[in-house]
Every structure is written in structure tokens, then in C-alpha cells.
Image (cartoon, rainbow, N blue to C red):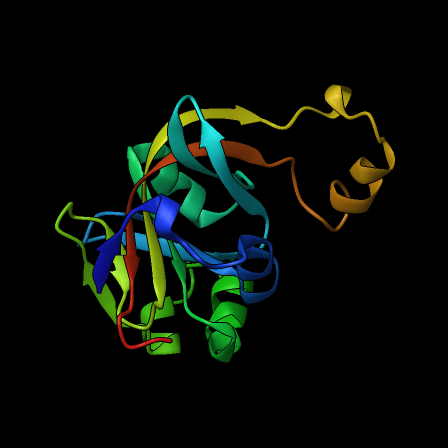
Length: 172
């Protein structure tokens, strides 16, 4: 993997996040969890390159994010949707996702976990977090569509500084 500046990214991140999806990973090299996410974004906030991700508190990965100051966002490419299905629908409480998917953990110099299969990795540090609050929705139909019965609890939003961007030099 080669490090680039966040400002050198050429990906259309609407496509990358919304269609390719990402793995959100937190924990230590000895104990971590990863999950698939397709909600989030990137931008410039507080004079820093940032990403924002949304995690439901019932997700196992949430526990790891809450315990750590850092996390990674790993983009594997659309050819790895099978990995995303396992990591999105199976809980790390019950399934060894690495064994079930063939993911190969890779530990960054900062001690964060990503995967050898990743074509793009954002190594991130938490800056801000807050729960999504139903009373603050302007479009109340979103509550019925995405929360409650059959959907899960309200997400916690994390704003994270993108401290390192890694790209696979072999992917064109």
C-alpha cells in the first residue's frame, strides 16, 4: 500500500461508499471487529479531512469503536460483495468474520487493523460523536423508513479525521 494525501483522492466517494460499501473496523490487533457500512461520507470540517459514519449501538463493532480512539474504513472493491454480505449480516459475537470470509488482517504502523484485500483505506481518529435524535428530523418519514420495528435503533454518528489514506498501487 502507498500513502497519499486525502486531497489526492480520485474516487467518486458517492459511488465508493454507496455502491462499493466499506468495512468499518475497530479494536486492537489482538481483538477487533469489522462490519459493512454503506452510509457515510467525507468532507472538510474543522480544517481537517474527515469522514462520517453511522453505527447502530446494537452492532458488535460499536463496542470496539467506543473503546478506541481510532478506526479504519476499508474499501475492497465491488468484486468483494460476498465479504460485505457476511460482515453486514453476521455478528462478530457469533461468527469469526475473518475465517468466514478469508479476510487477511493487515496491521498499520499506527496499530490499526485493515485488510490485505483493501484497494483503499482511510485510517481515522475520532473527533466527535452524537446519537441521531428523532426529534431533530425535519422529514419524519425517514424515522419510519429506517428506524424502529425491524430496522434497529437510531445510529450514532461519528465524525473522524482521516489521518492516513492508503491505496493499493496494483489497482488501476
